[in-house]
Image (cartoon, rainbow, N blue to C red; front, top):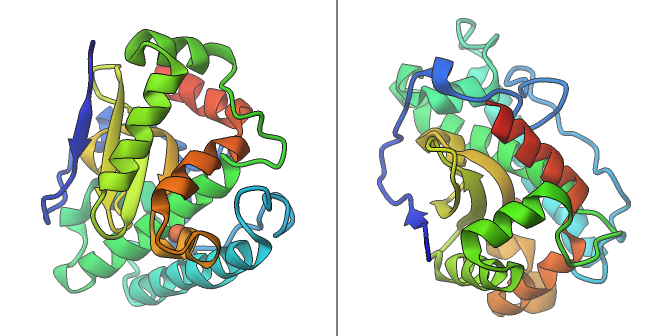
Length: 239
Ligand SMILES: [Fe+2]
């Protein structure tokens, strides 16, 4: 069985030519504006996902944490007129072109803005807990079954030391792959297209689950928006 798990632990971003990268990672309407960066509204009420994530966590997560990434990105780019027309994705794919004095700030806050923008979209109050459509079939082909995939995803998320994300990506070879990223790094920094990702920072779950990350990871599947995940899978396959 093909088991593909990789962890991005190197402190330096790996970049690949932007021409080889897929576009519209965060939104069907195009890449994410870096300047001005804007906090997107939640696509549901704060309490809509309460079967998995409580309203207070959602409010803090969106209105404070995500908002702070947006504010910090704008602050970093304010004096950088030559970078202001570039998308968040373009900046993250080519971090070496960002001046060193703001590189970490762009990496952390641009990544935080992109990751959370995707995250809100791939959740829904109407989650069934089971995948549908083409992604369900692709998961079965790659991981044997959804149960196997979910188990491996949850283990990878549990093993991510400290703060970070666990992802299902399409790698440059066109395969589905599990991966994790530290901090707010996004898979596009390594040439992978993020199809599905879960936030394993403590701020995502601590109020309800305290230190029980595994329980949060397990419950989270009940709010996954498989319609949106299928849209992302189709987009990834077209690149
Ligand atoms: Fe978060």
